[in-house]
Length: 94
Figure 1 (tube, helix red, strand yellow):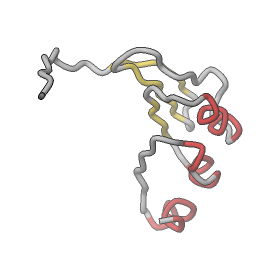
Figure 2 (cartoon, helix red, strand yellow):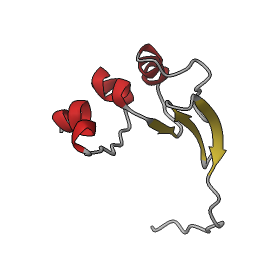
Figure 3 (cartoon, rainbow, N blue to C red):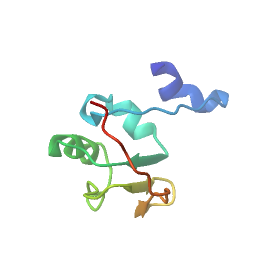
């Protein structure tokens, strides 16, 4: 997996990953990424880790349901976005 992240582009190989704790992502994965989608996180140290790896300072943790922050590294776009999902009623099982 590591080789795909750091040198897969040369071979036309991409990598799509997801994590709940970005601070555990190797720096190479963050520096090689082209796009980042971030939903709410519990820990400021996770966003600090991303910023240490070059993610812009205005890339902040979303504070509402369905909000996510989008970062396009190539085009230098940082944008807060919201998923458009139908309202769903939930029942609690007892």
